[in-house]
View 1 (cartoon, rainbow, N blue to C red):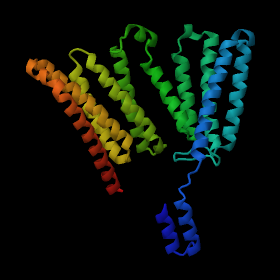
View 2 (cartoon, one colour; view 1 turned 180 degrees about the horizontal axis):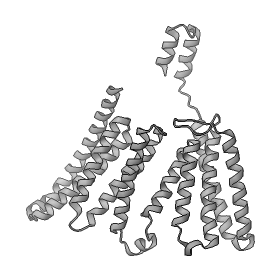
View 3 (tube, rainbow, N blue to C red; view 1 turned 60 degrees about the vertical axis):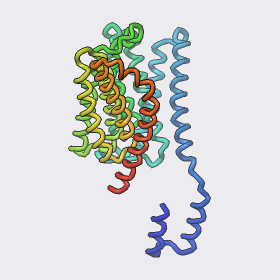
View 4 (tube, rainbow, N blue to C red; view 1 turned 180 degrees about the vertical axis):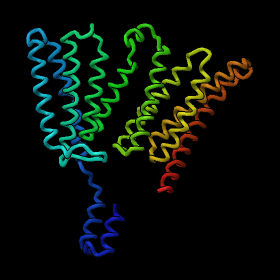
Length: 327
């Protein structure tokens, strides 16, 4: 930031006194509370919507389903009206509200809208309580809000709802009760949805539609694909295929982390790659079945983990240097 002020002073756009005053102010290292206030506002929206849900749940018999539906519909319509009134309109490029508070109004409206859709289906007992329909409608509504109002929080809600519709929440309670986390349907759903997210981001870049959403979309894809591949480790006879898919995914996201200069992606690539390499190592040792090697594991383990930490730090530093040089 100081380089910008130096450049302004060099071009005589600001006086010497103004330049000195800016430098003295910068040395105070004061920080803006804007982000902190926006974060508190985000938390307040989540707490408010959670509180409303709890009140409705505890007083459903006295309030009545119809009245609650009407109140939710009215509140959603009012919030949507104010969002639409202050919005610039749909654009392929990034657009923002003049006041950042409206960004959180969009988030609040999206939550209300999804709540209304789910509660409406529950009240009607539509299709024998098959909530996949409500989940799909909620996903479409949230993604519509995200793209029209350019809101990443709504995009996150939309992607989560879309993932639930595709099948990431297949028989959740049954899976928890039976510890059946290696269900091939869940793994397949995760791989398919992760692949669709990568295709989604590719088409968005190709047609230049909300390209700044790419980071959110690909972050979901990275974790879904990696965790699904780790789940495939429990599939007898297929673990090598899942590790091969994991290697391809991590290489792809390594290239993307360089392209986007995303240290967070690179860090997870290293972490997932580390676990994948260890899985392969243990499988190899298990197939060799040498008692002598297993005897040295307790001795070598501390050095192995310390060396892994040192290597991780070194790779992060090298990556930061690499992206700084490319800038």
